[in-house]
Image (cartoon, rainbow, N blue to C red; front, side, top):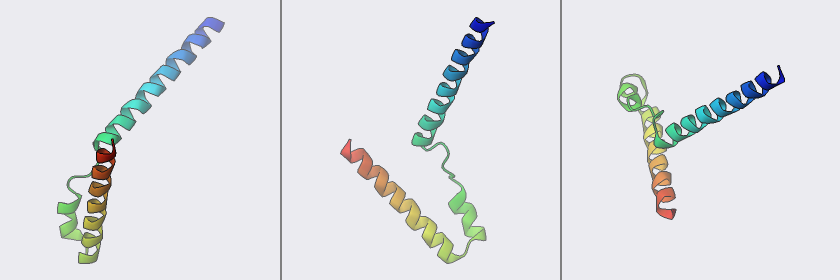
Length: 71
């Protein structure tokens, strides 16, 4: 019985670590970025909201470029 619990624990830790690693790698690659937000936002957001979103996106691109240049 004890061996089964140890095996379950090891398998659970390995699966959890694998899923977390996949999630972090996907997030760093930008797979969760919403590409349609700006296009859909033009239909539903006010001009101030669109301007703020564009400024935020520009800052994010700047930070990514800065981060890549320091590597």
